[in-house]
Length: 89
Image (cartoon, rainbow, N blue to C red; front, side, top):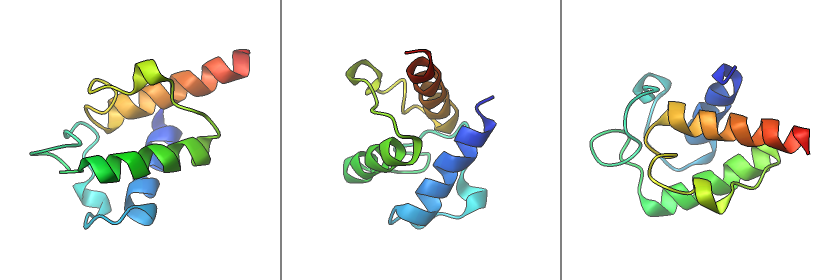
């Protein structure tokens, strides 16, 4: 179920953020920081902004933590959960 969300997040990273990564670099389970994709805090803020615009959601404060941004899979899961929650309300 998170596959379309995951692909959209990858497109945001590649198309909207100023990062030197290719699609092949985007391992779903690689850490987003340090030894993984090496995103920094400025890029993270931009990523959150693009996600909120693309999916028409506002990431809840309780989801803005290291667990959410551990890797692309965990991020896509949080986004999917928030989309589902928003549709229930």
